[in-house]
Length: 255
Image (tube, rainbow, N blue to C red; front, side, top):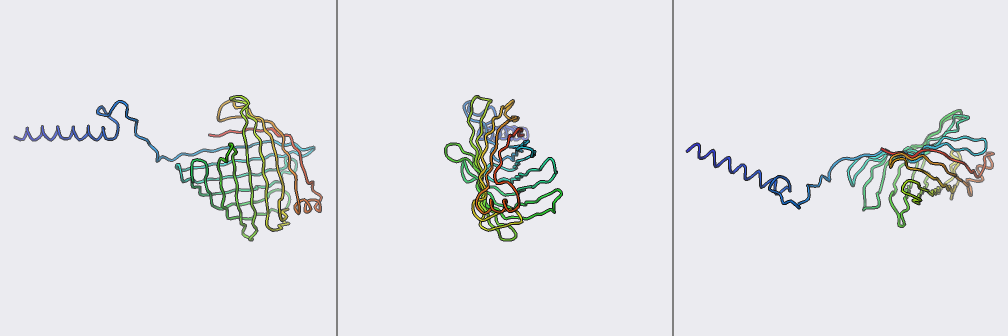
């Protein structure tokens, strides 16, 4: 009798295991055309150095960086972005932004982001720093424009809006020409930071890169910046130029 009970129990357990495998779409009992289970709740991450470049404008030599990293799942992610530049002759420069943000995916193309940002200077001149609350959008606009836009409110109550857009032309599978545009609009004068009310500047660039692999691509190009309005007046009073054209060379990589 005991042997019979053990046999029935063993058969029942085997049938239960087979049923579980079939329900999950795995195991020998699964239909041959069933898809494998989707593991769609994993944590992923990426580090992208979009621009690490050398710029030359006449006698001025500048090193510039623009990088971002994210960690999270399909919809919710932690984003870190930083951008800045340094004068190679004076070793003075500015961290234009160091942002830490929470990102939520609205749909297949757009993420809404909010968080905190820091801006600071370094070098021979007295160092300055300020902090901002940020809300922004990042994503892919119609016609495949990559867009990154933010509204910032500093700890002094100064409000600004920045916009960056990029577009890639695939000349071949490896050779890519990228157009880039950026601007900044300020809603108050902040002379300490060289910022005037209104549209501050317009920056344009063309960069031709060659992808040795999808992760690594050196590039060359040109960049042009024009300061406008009250910001232009501030720069003229300070003896600074109001436009700049540069040759650029750098590398883009991610992992």
